[in-house]
Image 1 (cartoon, rainbow, N blue to C red):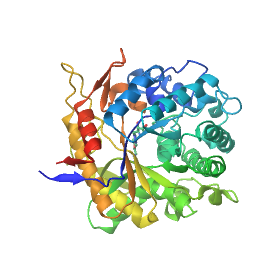
Image 2: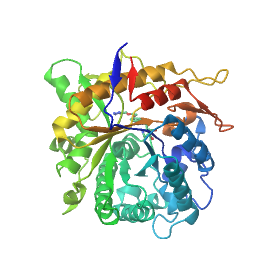
Image 3: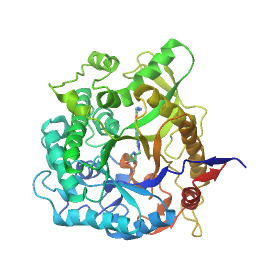
Length: 447
Ligand SMILES: N=NNCCOCCOc1ccc(-c2cn(C[C@@H]3NC[C@@H](O)[C@H]3O)nn2)cc1
């Protein structure tokens, strides 16, 4: 058998997010988020699902922490629900909301697990959306107030923080493509949101340096890999354009202090313009301690004139696909990680999300999700290749600990290594749970 063995100091973890697992949407003073509004609007989420109850982790977090302890992971990445801890979006904290996270953090620490907090995992307080949400530059200051309050509340114990999860999803998927909350289809809005999210990131990093001087902070962009269909320059250029949409648009500002001109020119052709104020880029390019990378899939693509904003078409014909329809493309994981190192140097990287959707159900108490184990073997091998190539990977955080509310797909798509019965909230460890537990324990696996 062939063994893939990881560096001894690699951190292993699992991830979730507030709106996807907590439930208790109207409990203990929590105010609505844009995802409460979006999911309760008919037609937005498959089967009319919403996060009102989700996995009921608000009440079952102790059980969930015991699963993390059994896995033997070093870290647990979760997000704070802004409207749960600060129902007015700014101003007074909600003691019950803060208390929930204090209890969760204490439970993790008592069980030897390091918490990693994501401040923004898409659940913007609805009250801010009434005033334009992230399109409104004032939301940046509201976020800094929220973030600073969380740093003050938990910074004595929590030393690793992530500002913004998947800014591409929170801006372009949500305001240009329209698939996620608030569901707009407006390029200018998406550009404004992307800039304000990065500005919020930078301002919260500045605050963090004063409040948690011994802490580490980063953000978590999502990336995929586009492989040119042929060596033809038009195919290469098409892939470069779309790759820059997810990578350079969100990383050049942080690591180079500027937005890519290629994309600014493309956006301008579609009447979308960046509006940057004096000093913004200095704020955004505040030094950070690590970059989170979320990777799920990639694909071959080729030039197709007039197809979308980037004159590109995906070619998915010859890949196995997960149950959400995404190609299994582990080579893209290796390629995008080495590509990031070429672009940005040796910024430490945590894989803050990687995992697969397979919708197996429980049969005789067992969930035989061998496909997820195979996906993890392929992607952890790709990760090992990147590590061996010199990419400074600090940790691997699997998405997700639990089956949960998969946004516009609702509960129809299962990413967990633990199956959740959404009627009874009963958890069932899948075969992939036991495989991941063994891998974390050994720090190696056999292929
Ligand atoms: N690329 N251009 N496509 C143009 C057309 O896109 C249509 C659909 O696009 C996307 C792109 C990306 C996603 C996505 C979902 N997750 C999984 C969550 N990650 C954070 C965590 O909460 C997980 O639940 N990560 N990414 C969904 C849809």
